[in-house]
Image (cartoon, rainbow, N blue to C red; front, top):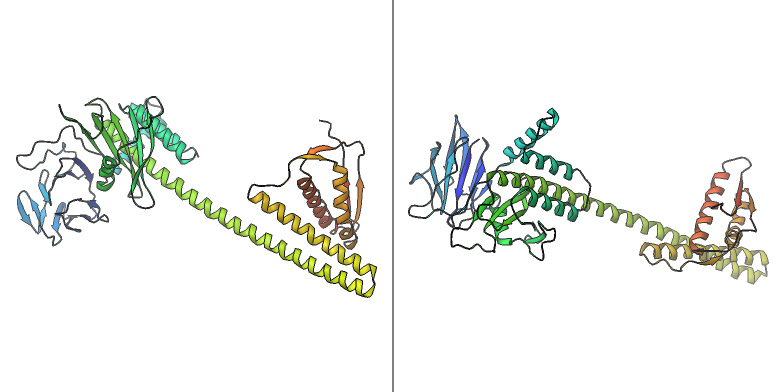
Length: 447
């Protein structure tokens, strides 16, 4: 597979795979290959496959595109050609070539720098691991960890648990002594979020955001190490970084540090890149599912509020109708009207009590603690309210109360509402039968 080995002006090396589709190079973040260089144009050049060869074409860039030292408009690339875009030196590799050693003339090579792995190669390793597992063959260390990644990502866990488990796997699979995740926040900035060490807790350490930003901005993995007498930004002597990718977009990076200079090799970087790709996709899916769940919850809240408003409107109607009947009954000296009005008022009060209790449960502040109450009395109170409705529905109601039932510590309002709901459901079902009957019985549990 063809690739571009890229060394920036700071000497950091990475590589990206190119396909036979058009690839735009430039400073704009939307480009397929981002060249973070002020001397590069926003859309600097294009690499295309044409008539059996890869071509690079300049897109009217301000400072020009150079191949092997000469400015070009279009050029057919061969293995080893040096391309200069701004201050970046890019070496074209056609196939499985060795790592590029391209650097500006007279500049010393950057110490301890290794290349990355592309998505296609990561997928190939995953497929090979699956084939080996299906054939019952032994796994290499890399295939073992790839299989472990797959098993971990199949579990439905919260994002923090998933990320910490992945970091434990990273620390075990690489020769690092600590690792961390850096994620892109909603405001676009990067922030270190999770960290683990070989001992478990990272003791307050978090990965360096600037180091992670290089992997995110360039969408490349890399290893950087300290030369003799040189110090990195941290006390670590070797750092390995891979972007967290999801659907072609870098949402963060995974950073591994070691106190050893030569702790990491290409196999470690290959595995870390796979973990970055898999973890990035898993975290993105987790967040998508969480947003979907939040939307469902908000929809549920809307439905709940609509139901409460309906009950509230019914309560207001009952209170208004009841008060009018009471006033008319008093004026007409009709006891029946007064009694009917009071019944309506009682219904309205019941509805308001239900709303109050439901809202209190909704906000987690259910009023009233458990207290001693007689279940038979609660049944009696319910039947006082529901008996009139039973008569209207022409349904017979019978109470079979066990007098041996002793008072118990319970939530009286909750039990009252539960009994009333059951009786209401019974009345509704009994109206469908020619001679419906509802029996409410109490008894002591044998337990």
